[in-house]
Length: 126
View 1 (spheres, rainbow, N blue to C red):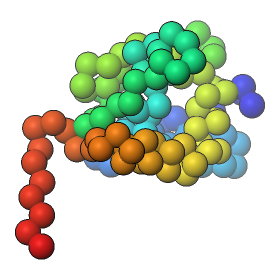
View 2: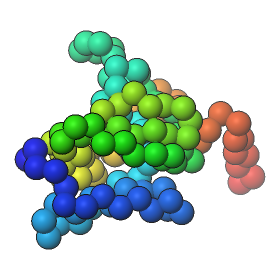
View 3: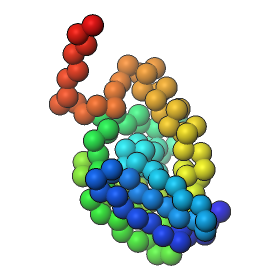
View 4: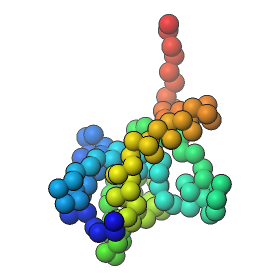
């Protein structure tokens, strides 16, 4: 599907974007959108060059910019602003969110990395 969403609503407090495609409504977190950015910084310039994004749990979206009639550009509060999210990519993210999120969590675990920002330390007491 490459049709534009009928509506995009930014929920700042929950750090989510809500997409409406016809009667379907989806919510994607800023963290999900940031770690799955279609930018070269995240995806790399070719197969096998993707860079695992870590420490993005608290990221939020500062601004949404239209890119022609086919996409949006998201500006995140961590400074990332180079991803162009096409309507087709966003719909795919909405349809396959659970699988993509689980794959991301597994990649973090395999890398011994965390969703927490670098300046956060967690101490387990038990």
